[in-house]
Image (cartoon, rainbow, N blue to C red; front, side):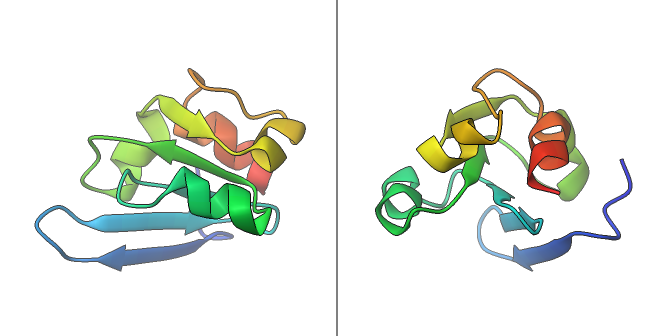
Length: 87
């Protein structure tokens, strides 16, 4: 998957804090809180155990906000599949 059209953010912590954002939602690592996405009404999906953007694409989505579910994202799909819906 080509990530050129997505905004990518990486904060180098013990494990990197990673976010890939599309125009409709974002894919994040486990550092971020699903509760915050829900409270703010944002479309988001969380993957865990990732160290880089490529890991995020193949990782299994573990949690999805209700707005993300409305876009067709479901737990168990790959990060790449989630990003296609957040494009």
